[in-house]
Image (cartoon, rainbow, N blue to C red; front, side):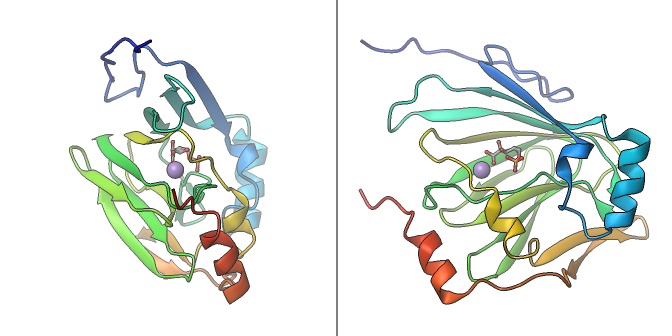
Length: 208
Ligand code: PA5
Ligand code: MN
């Protein structure tokens, strides 16, 4: 009746986790529409579109309400034009599901946006735990020159809505190179969500 308690060992450099039940990869060519500089994206894809830019290892013990999904994301360093490599980003399909991220190695940022368009940027350095509260769109950014490895944990009934970012022309903020560092710029393609769109997102919240 009870599940067996388990420990999982995470390699902070590769993101490999013992006891993972799933793994998937994203190639650069699968990230069309994410970056502002589409010409630079096409040029980079022509050069190395088949390169894997991030890999997720995860464990899904059970699908029961109340259980967890946990694992790691390994992100290669790189840029498209001056914009740092990012994950696709999403809001949870059940929008009031939270998540934690923990920095294993590398230098990153968590880029967060509320449905109304408020932005928060939090460092994801090694040994930093970031709490992504319910209702926040989230995406990770590798601002370093080495791979960024993160571990995460979220409720198993969260789901992911990937359309939310594309439907507003990208996130409100983009993270670009600035000398040896980074800066946040406003995304010129961003279209704020209407009140009806915000209501639709908030209505996915499970009120149990
Ligand atoms: O649950 C999460 O937010 C992470 O596991 C992400 O899914 C992972 O980092 C990959 O990002 P994305 O799902 O936005 O492609
Ligand atoms: Mn998530």
